[in-house]
Length: 104
Image (cartoon, rainbow, N blue to C red):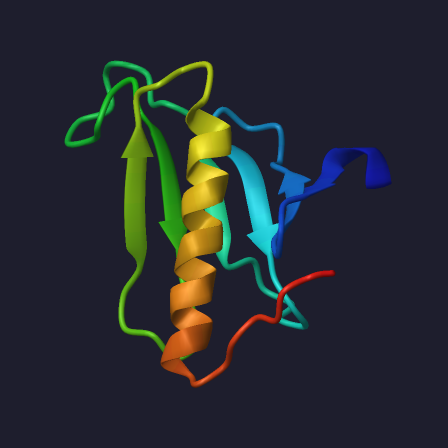
């Protein structure tokens, strides 16, 4: 199913499970588990949730808790959240003392 995989600078994105919730799963490096999930906006009627917003959830190995970002910008939400995932990945790598080299 390679047609369902796209790539940003450092994250491989795979189309979600076709559910009403998960739109994209993001993988980086040799980590087998997904580090990022982009979630579709929730429909009204889900108590305690943010309605109408796309959400990015990130979990990193060894980190405490998850990170979240949200976007209401419907046409650009997925691209905006993918860019945020790239930024968080850079921060996580830097916290471990790693850096990404520039591509020539």
